[in-house]
Image 1: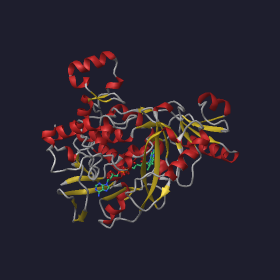
Image 2: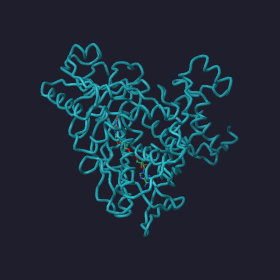
Image 3: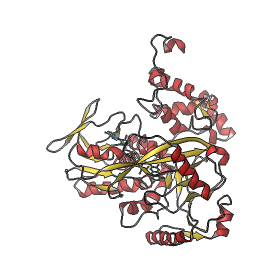
Image 4: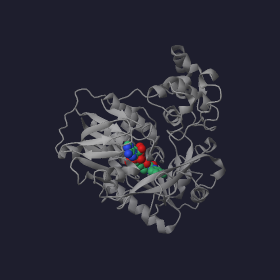
Length: 481
Ligand SMILES: Cc1cc2nc3c(=O)[nH]c(=O)nc-3n(C[C@H](O)[C@H](O)[C@H](O)COP(=O)(O)OP(=O)(O)OC[C@H]3O[C@@H](n4cnc5c(N)ncnc54)[C@H](O)[C@@H]3O)c2cc1C
């Protein structure tokens, strides 16, 4: 019997897991995908929003700034990349200038620090490659960038080292409500718990419907993003935002934490919660918008693209509450700025649990820090020599584009990576210009060898994305090796 089961290992579920792992609770997280962070949380823009965007009378507004302020410490404790590069919200038209003023006022009132409106001279000095038709820009120095999947891995690893039990590949199929508990069915086994936290993202309404706690609905809104060649790295140094549309923050230019520029996302309401396709029309929209702000960016510079789905609730705000069913909590409708807000949401939910009678006794020993993956490419020549001396696997380069060694791939596998994406997102192998053309087979070999499964079971991101099709009439894989 668990005290609390979290359903969904996105950024919200992982942040909840870490926060609750501070207390003496029997705690588990059930995730349907093969690894955490493989839902919406890996397919976003990776921006820690500056804190001033969302209106004050919304939960988004309540948690954007408080979430923002926690990420620098989290990045240090959990050893993932974090760069506070700041953002510029630009105005091309005179009609947009009032919006800049209003947004500054909103941020100032919330206590967001450093907001300034820049004129053309300052914009040109700081960002010479932006269009000269820009009239003014609102500078928000508190905006930052991270890799969202690294944050999920760090949060969950910390929660696990503090006692959380993680069950990936465990989709919740049904929930039965007992007198004082819930019983959850997954294909592998059943779980019993006193409290359920529903953080199942796009599928949160389906989970809530299992116990008739679905007094809300979720609909998917797609966003396509385009990652550009390193050639364009540095073309802008701030996050570039246009004035928002009614459905999103608009098409952005994003200097990612690893350096390359990304552009997007689109915002399109769709019906299918599994549709992660990108499209010519999406690319057209993104590059038409980007060209207006930064004329030297070209669609031909795209090296890869992906789409993510926002989980949109009817009122367009987060829903964070005890449902009509006692001990069943919904933390749902977490669209942007959900990544930014996640650590603040986790603290808020903990307080709601306390207010509703959960006894929260702090553990005497709770470890905030994790070791984090090694990073050969960032080591000095002396550090590299020492690393190779300690472990010769550092001398074998697996990914040439990003200079990732066998030792790092093995580290990723030891810390939970079970797929090509899991390795890529932990240690960058396969993330460079050739997008895995050179290293995929080598990483598959290492995954097969370390997990003790045949190559035919190695996938890109879980079941259905196998790389090799088994052919029983050809040489067995063991002999082939
Ligand atoms: C294109 C795009 C760009 C964005 N950019 C930003 C940004 O720059 N900054 C920002 O702050 N926010 C951004 N967001 C929003 C942010 O990505 C989301 O708010 C956040 O990822 C939501 O996290 P989550 O944990 O609620 O959902 P998810 O990450 O979707 O997690 C839910 C998890 O539940 C699991 N699950 C579902 N059903 C079951 C089941 N039956 N059993 C077990 N597990 C289940 C899923 O597999 C999934 O892993 C963006 C979103 C999109 C789509």
